[in-house]
Image 1 (cartoon, helix red, strand yellow):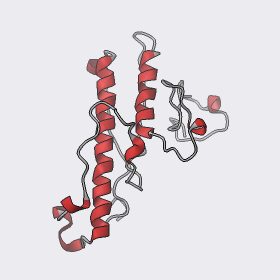
Image 2: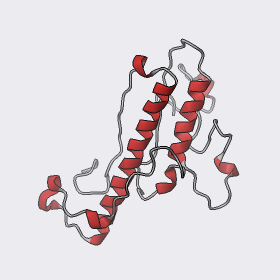
Image 3: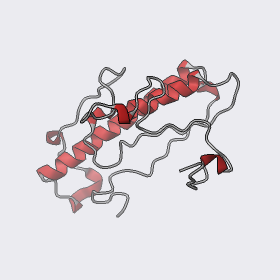
Image 4: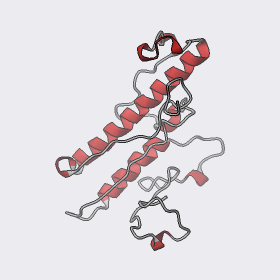
Length: 171
């Protein structure tokens, strides 16, 4: 999809084309590509996305205004994907949430029966949100590192969330 929400076979025909449009499975900083990954290896998609932002900043012309949409697919189900962040990343891992730590969810009151399966689902979701937190922190750190933190408007939005839980985005 493009900035206007219109898909096209030739993105150059789009009225506002992207200058840089990597896929989640592409890492411009390291040259890694999903299609070249060893069979069965899962890709650290959030790390790839952060690396692509770093690559973008390293190649940005001085004093050039920019728009960059940094995205992570981590809050989409399934949420049990710790491999989305590359092992050894700074400030990672956060402390893992286990199903044993999920006792109640106050805002759901009695609408939700917390059996073991639901506790695991909620714990997986909380772990995914921690990965999103890491990702946002990494993007903010890169803005600071490359001198753009004080003159960049940052908008955080999400259309994801616990869509398959009681009182999720679809209920």
